[in-house]
Image (cartoon, rainbow, N blue to C red; front, side, top):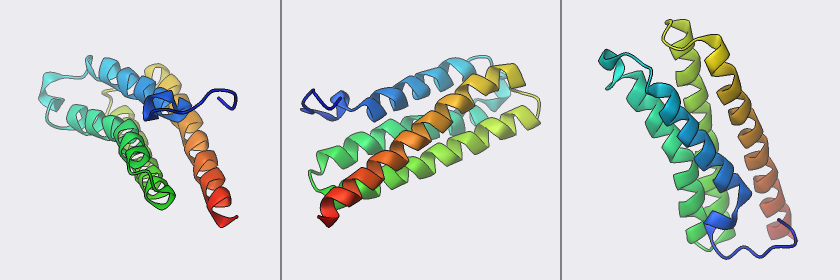
Length: 126
């Protein structure tokens, strides 16, 4: 993305990947039992949607400190999402083979968020 300009949060690869993760989680939870609609289904969908939403909100603040803070909130939502997914596996709602690719997306996105936070902090320290 270094040779492209960032005109919107939608241009950020981290936001794009977060949206893909949220979409994956929505698709994944379609198979959950109906009695989990207000339980794990809702929790997974909310935390998954929170990740890109906080990236977008932070970018819209047009202040590096606020952006970093919102990226940290996104990190927290990502960890919350991982926890709900692991719980769904533990209670037998989500089979391991279905969980593995989503956890891999979470790990990749977590690394991107950490790298972006470090980059923004380095730039603001100069």
